[in-house]
Image 1 (tube, rainbow, N blue to C red):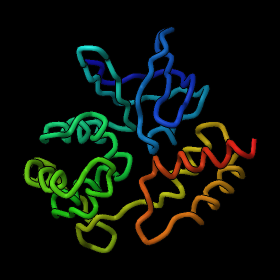
Image 2: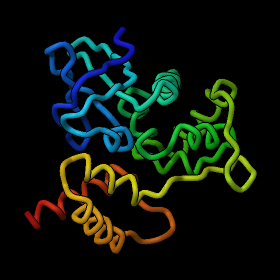
Image 3: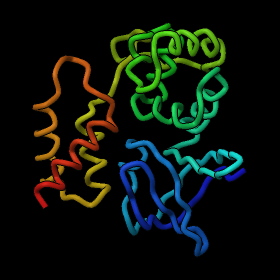
Length: 201
């Protein structure tokens, strides 16, 4: 098991990064939130989880050990593989996931692409007693509090090499297309922003 990697960030893509570790470039699948903290040319440490399949070895990377542990716990639920577990962490912070599962917040869980109502109910049923301590939100209860998607998308774009000004412009343009109080998942918004910036290059 590769528990963590530390090395120079060689490349950052929308859903992965390459870290040079001991002269070897290691491709690591990461959520937009984790990628936002990486800078090409700088050293970084990622907690990792190696997923072994008959035809592949895939390394998933996380900003910290807490996120990694939750990623692995999510996969113990029926029907949840590594990609779906990563999708959960791309939409919600670890604390928000714990609050949603502990509180039976199906609406929050079904915001994750690939999780329907039955899947959300199964997550709550199977993980509620194992999810761990639940952080209290700023309003004093355990309701789900999601972070501002704008900052996550902005940091993701900067991590991919665009300037802060370009990132701000793209975020503003994407914000105009978001309808309603609940925005799409961050990865969807990030891809939209990348498409917009691609047109202006």
